Image (cartoon, rainbow, N blue to C red; front, side):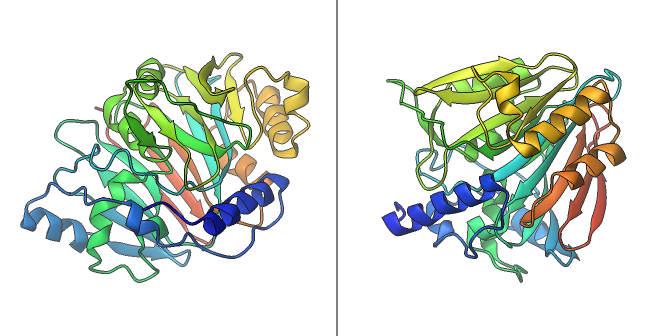
Length: 332
């Protein structure tokens, strides 16, 4: 079902507000679950074990859940999904033994969930999901719509140390390439996490699809992997473009990167703060220092901050609900 023009207009207004650094207009996506198809390929017992693993861990509220069994990441691939506004991301790659990916997620005051998945035909991963996009509220106990949670990771890392996150980019425009299937602008993250072990492989996943920005603001993406490689994926003049990282770090906020001089990028306050700190550190930040930097660029509507250790498998999540949580993803 396509979202009404009014809802799309509100989504764009929220994107512009987030980019300006002020608090967004209160609200939530209209009936987001109508765009999400049933993805579960679980047995009844696996579905029940998945739902039974759900637990609330802080007052964001943030939940945790382990997905047991299989899901179909391709189901309903051509349906548009609402796109949130992710705000500040960076890859700190100066220490090749401890490469790190970090991001602030800035959006509406919705419940979120740390999700573990291990599909039989893909890589295990840890991701963070805004579960309001499943139509789920702050008391999701027993809600079977959670079985579609694998389809909507807003950032994540897989067992091979490949991490991906998104951010709004009002300048992005993706024109369809004839013959390629369409995929939602958030769903693409699931395909990347399941299928790609490196940045190069992740870029090839992007290249296999036409991205659909319908239902929310257009996006751009940051990728990084355990080898210390990184890249920004943007859509410039309708075409997908890729800019590999260099110099030990790469950052992304809500301003374009490709074909934009570094001095012009730094006119954005958050990008400038990230760039100056990462340059001063030579791209070498551990998780506590990365979280401190994320705190410096947080906005009034930052929902969570997360770091992904691309070699260590360590994941640290700090939420606006006051929680600090640590996870580990064993290397594959």
